[in-house]
Amino acid sequence: PKANARSSKHLSIPPPFSAASAHHNSGPPSPTVESTKRANRASYVESAQREHGRHARPGSSYVVSVPAQVREVMRRRVQILRGDWAAQVVQFGTFVFQAVIIGTIFLTLDEATSAYFSRGGVLFFAVLFGALSAMAEIPALFAQRPIVHRQSRAAMYHPFVEGLALTLVDVPISVITMLVFGVIIYFLVGLQESAGQFLCVLSVVFAVLYYN
Image (cartoon, rainbow, N blue to C red; front, side, top):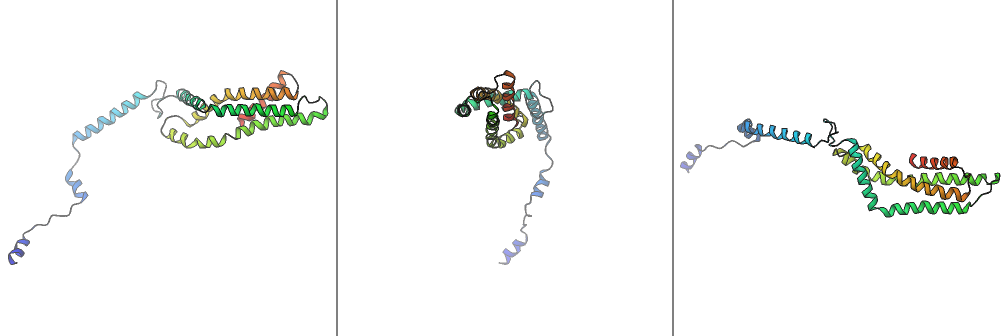
């Protein structure tokens, strides 16, 4: 026991290991590591600048220009409509059905003053139905907000490009739908058969449809 106690005095206990001491002992990074990091950074910047479109601003975080973004988002919108063509057919059929119903209810109104109230009701229904149809699309637009926000944060396209592309794609469809709706309801009711007043009614209905 005395020998063991005497030998234990000469044993050295290593100091506790700590991250600070390890960092102190590691020393500064070698020049080879620093040069590798600088080379990787330079190659990344060069590849990012090379991926920029011809008409895109060099300092912009977006790879392509705004017209190219609009073109690509419009192409995606057309593909979505092709995949959901049944909904477009149902919407077009709904407009035609409502126009036929209202037109046959107020079929060939009299030109006397007693029919003025009915004519105003027909025009009010035409404007109101377009406005309600536009409001029915609001939940779908709100459902797309997380997707648009995520893709805009990823610098895929500007947020306003989504709305612009949707408008440019949906305008021809809406023009055809409202033209058929207006022709059916206007001439079945027997409103004034002049090109100027027909275009005035059609433009008001179309404006209310897109104002909402």
